[in-house]
Length: 294
Image 1 (cartoon, rainbow, N blue to C red):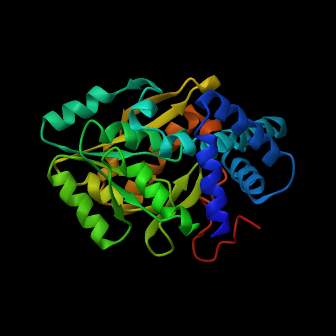
Image 2 (image 1 turned 90 degrees about the vertical axis):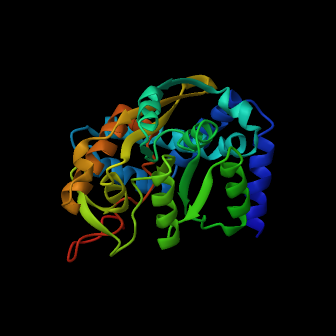
């Protein structure tokens, strides 16, 4: 309870400042994370070592440092993204590329899935989209349960319908798509052992969800990759909407998962420093394979 109280107090205080100042503090926080051995820095270094073997040691170190600074910004900007009036947040969306593709799909009566990896300021996508169209997103409560209400209120204030990551939530997604609405999914989360299939991500087998390919297989559904680029000097965000490859709907679950991971990887390679490398993406391993994190 104390940790949750302090976290909420910090976010409340941070929300009083302009985004440019918040991002400066976030970069300083990331530099702090990078200055000593801790879980965030260890996981980020391990992931970047695994995913970018072609980089030399200095290049990997530079990417780790940038990733941790972006992580610091992502943490602190939640004060603005969850607590500012929605209109104030949306004024920070400086550019949207590809939105017309989504509008065309909906005009044809299709439901739309936004597959938004942990890249840039993914929270912005839901806030922006739900102000323009009904939107349903899956929601997994945070480990720090005292933040649950704050997050729900912050994400839902633009009209996003949050549904749990269970059978009932999946049914809600199908219903939303059948109504021609938008569904939002984070495609690069480990769904848990036994709940996904292993497919390569940056050449490393990763436990990958099968839900999104199943949704993509619906005849009235169009899938887009989506990410919100964090612009420099606190200027705001650039939302990118990209068509997902058709192979994502392949009936072979492994081929579909491979296609999905390739699409996520393409987005990440566009902004490698803004990806959440401190996430244990490869924590579950195929049977008999050793763990990748110490």
